[in-house]
Image (cartoon, rainbow, N blue to C red; front, side, top):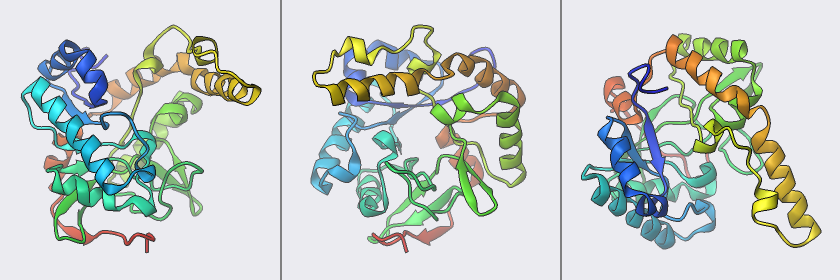
Length: 259
């Protein structure tokens, strides 16, 4: 679909997966797409110490750069897990040479997000004076409530007409659509975690079945929605957008408590 519309995208890539399939990563980079970092082991950031996070992220960055021969300057945390208590991670990313992060969902959610965080892409100055751009996944504001529209399950559940209308509204506000997808969302075969992993115990089996239900829900609508978006709107890689938008004006980063 990207090739059909001459669109370049950013592929946030898990380091250990890249080691298993280096030719695939070289093919993606060779077609003009951006390879960015999704950690080495796909770990939840707020459960790590700064030292553990630094080691995992540096290993992933080095792995991806060795495979592609290109600088890796973008990062997205597993499960958007840079929360208000883990903003120190942006300091670590800046130290490691990352230009931008796209991990902070500016919404309230039981697993991720920083309510009240700036929706607009912004260049921030860390406590140590380093600079890093934050590209928040997209949300819209309705009557004081933020509604996520950034991808994944949000895309699967939204009707196509509502989705296209929401992206148009974002653009009228001067905001880009910062979206995401997972490879399995374009696969015709259903996820069957509950059967594949065969979890033991009633609670684990229930959780696996709920996971299967949620991740398969309206997944067959994804291809047509993405095709409609690619035909109606222009997209860039994250790095291209940052450079085109000229995000250089710095704001001080939120404190550890988000104030």
